[in-house]
Image (cartoon, rainbow, N blue to C red):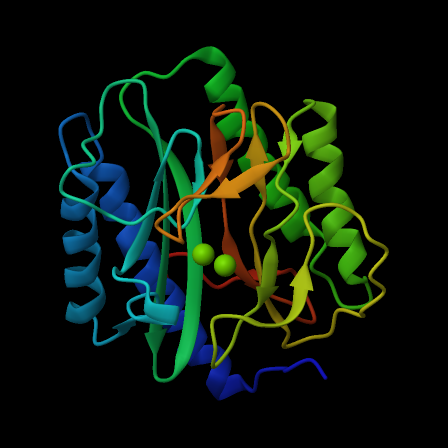
Length: 250
Ligand code: MG
Ligand code: MG
């Protein structure tokens, strides 16, 4: 059974999403060579708390921070550290969740640090494009596989690796709810209905699909050590256009 949100729940999710978007707005501003991922975490935590929300990631299955900060070949779940200092030419994926009034917003973005290579620029642009291709399929009457297929088509066109072990998910009172959303077609015929909220989050690699988890039990990296990008929005199906919950409110 897929959880469909009431009008009141939707309002609170939109608010949670707005707070997540505020964090990303700030990240875009402050990410530059010389800053540590711990400093980024502190900034994110401050914004979330100032806005009367709870950092969803902090303590989630023991995760020790408010954001995941994953550099270059790191795909997701990187742990912020004062020893991880950004340098020119890096890319950094920031994933952040906020819980407001008991409901969750979840969004990730990969940022260039200074100037990055052309092929990395293409990886970022394509991963972002695949996210929006997926979002466009979030319509009443479509099935979940339409979202997966749209993401996969964009990735395949550019011959990028698609991370297979991780994917999108339903969002609501919990960060991870049913259904799981694959970033490639598996034929899931789950019907999309108004009020369903799903985090769509393609993770594309410059090289092969395969990833591995580091000894810290969290950090996921590509096995060929080539860069990976991650773009995510929490999106709701409505009776009209898909509603991106994790964007700034007007
Ligand atoms: Mg996320
Ligand atoms: Mg997510």
